[in-house]
Length: 348
Image 1 (cartoon, helix red, strand yellow):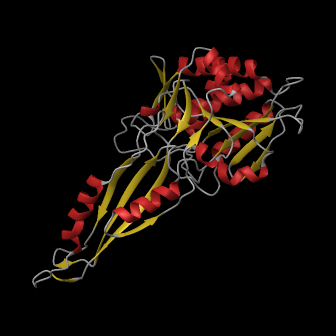
Image 2 (cartoon, rainbow, N blue to C red):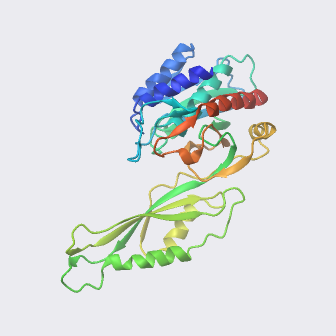
Image 3 (cartoon, rainbow, N blue to C red):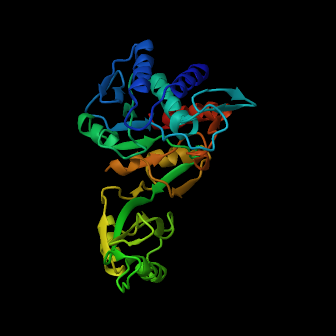
């Protein structure tokens, strides 16, 4: 099982699968199901299957991870599409985020596929466009799936239990001014107004702090203005990244930001809410019984698309994601498959 998982991951790494263009990796995942005689369905580049003895009267557990990747950054010193194993490390773009989780969950689903009388149905969904939260990600697939009661979302957590996840709102800010020639007086230069945004952000305070997710985090990530040295621009564009804890809704965050900043504020989307699963849920309790710890995750995943309780858990380490010369340890995949099987054995 482990060797088959490693072979699959190496094959996936060899195939370019930038978010929105994952057709080749979707084909390879189809081949996995075909090899194991498991009927599957495909929507865009999302490939999914249900367990052999699916019963609509039972609750359903979704196993989900993604096969799209970001583009490799310029700091790579290795070929990002060469899945080399050296000193126990499997290198390659998407190896850690989230290839290790994906092949582990596919292996575990295959292991339990013909379980004769499970307490939960299983749905395995290998999805695309996670990195861009696209229309054809898990969010677009959910209407086609059976009703999901609980989910495991495979992302690199060192197989610890991420029982909460911050939401995300990205705001586009616009400071208006008056365009003119740089040689003439202009008392409405929007660039000179940027300091008012800095001062307002320094004063911005969110009182509610989550036990699991900590405070809301607000980060100014982009500033853009002007195109020529001799023209004062008419506006300055800024981008604000806000990571939302479980004490606020995204709509509440939008209202607070709009009232706090002296500029035009527009949220790109309010749908990426924070996620949470109760610590006393049987799935979490099964993980705790295996000696795993619970924590709150600052990073966003396809959990944001789910309205049911969901647990983020997978092999690999989140800080390695999107880094140059990305890798996952081979033994992390071995441990991941074993822990997933032990977890589901307690649940099923």
